Image (cartoon, rainbow, N blue to C red; front, side):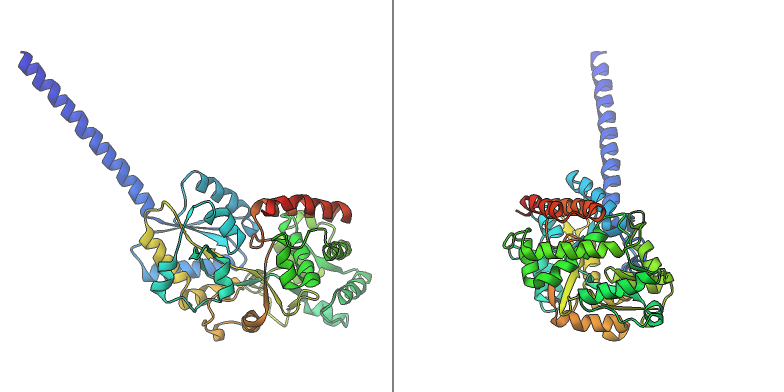
Length: 425
């Protein structure tokens, strides 16, 4: 009896052991299947950018039909919502397969310095990319000799868009200087037309205007020194820029705080406002969503006094540490960095390719002109889009700008910028 009981007990242990193994196998298999899905995390959900992303994903699907792709885009202008979701996931060691991140401080200070990204030097060598991107751009995505992401586009932030009919009907020329701007603004306001459309429901849109004034008054080199601490944020030229910013805010639509950037662009499209300072994703919105014609319905110029400079915003994707499907991620990154991938994406997005050997014939007049400017202009990383300075500093700047646009107190604004400078280190 004892022997029989022992055999029964051993059999039960074996059954439970097999069940546990089976359960573990199913659990691991489910996890593995989840990880094998290529999750592409971005904030491209509208205004031309979604069209560009879909073109990329179609191209990738045609090349790699066996790889399942999850388009994990999160809506929100400039990635405000997506960045919060991403931060939570990265801190919880649950990274997406790859994610959109701006070149510069947003990549390096937020994720590379935290040890969350894998270097991609081997991918660059394998793809023959050593001379395919401008060195100044490679510097923005590198740290300590390693490259950490692949740039898919170049956006220009120092662009002033204007309604051509409004300007033509009023005999006006697009302003090249701030004096020109205020003369044009006065003429428009006297006719009951809002001179400058602003949608700063998310304050980065107003911060973009301020950064463009800064680069105009300081020049690209000294502008960059603001974010390294070499030039203090209470410098005389920063104060001059704040005074200009204050004056410009006197010509914006009264409902600016309840509008987003697309709403502001619509005011220009309808002729209810004459001008808008926005990155060239606005061109994608005008053309793709509003069906306007470049140089017929709307025109463009560089923001006042920023000729010869290029406020750069570059969307990039990298390889987070801890993902299982590394080979699939590198296939996607390889497509992003290819001429074929960049020429499928950028004409729809409104941006220009990051590669120097892309095909200009695939781009409109704005794209061709911007590609030429990019080759020779002085590059200045965008503060508003996280390229120039760490996220903690930018958050405080956006808060200061938000208050300033309402209260227009230059001294308080400069004081807030100075107080935030501790987060530049």
